[in-house]
Figure 1 (cartoon, rainbow over the protein chains, first blue to last red):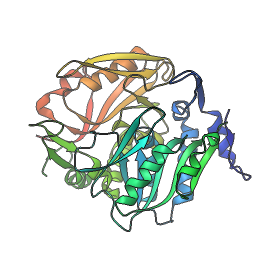
Figure 2: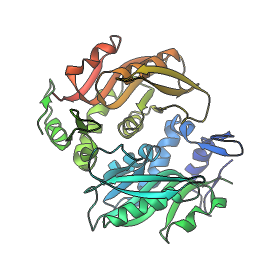
Figure 3: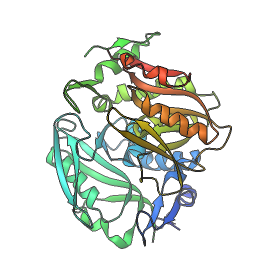
Figure 4: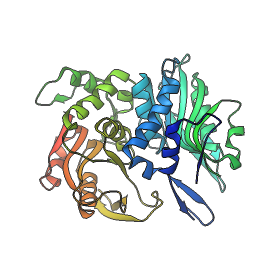
Length: 184
Length: 184
């Protein structure tokens, strides 16, 4: 199971890590899927997760929290509400009703695409990108590109879980990544 | 954009209503789409929205907040966190990694399906269902069915917006519906 991050491990992290369920062979054979729905069933673990992010970003002049569809929609908004930032949903194609900008990214087989509303962020906005997990980093990289193309500065990416062996951190163009739990 | 206000005119509701953008002809001609992404760009309006629901449900013995994918994932978790309840994502097919129960529902053309993890709720739990908007009520009805099949008691459905002309309220098997505003 997942282990905590870094030397100084906040005492809340053990409970968070223990609340995440690993589902073997989903969505296909050989993948050990990190299921955060069990974390969400534990109100204390969920609250601690949000608190850890909020404590890190409060008072740091973050004006935008961008969450990646769909599990980034679960963790992003509570952070945005607590720090007084806008929440911007980054979505799969054709879900957002207004004018959008799109960013393609590479999957194992084929490509996918992430979209953001035009006008959601302005030059001068300082943005956080939130998702439940970073694997290869492809989605987070697309998310950062959308925000930067709109003129925002991406301050950090924040995920509950990192799969360090997939080296997603290296895909982030030098942007910092903050995670609570690593899973090997 | 003007929307009709609900019974008790809380002053926060006016700001929330005016923060919602209507996008004509999305996803197809003739539909006036209620776009809540602009509400999420207004931190005060978003906070007020969450607070209005939290004030209603705090201390009512609600142990489960179920959110309908994907916009229910934005409004549900802040409510769950504030009232100390579990958050359960109700998802489109093949997204949840564990064993699920499924409920089909009717669309204008064809059918769709909503899923919930087995063991997410226990018999006797009191549940809230949250989505951004109720239109025909088909999705909310499927959500209620999933929770009841698992033995939970659905206390109320909560949405930001109702489209009353589509009579979704009548599809809820007598379950109460709480909304912040109507759009005609």
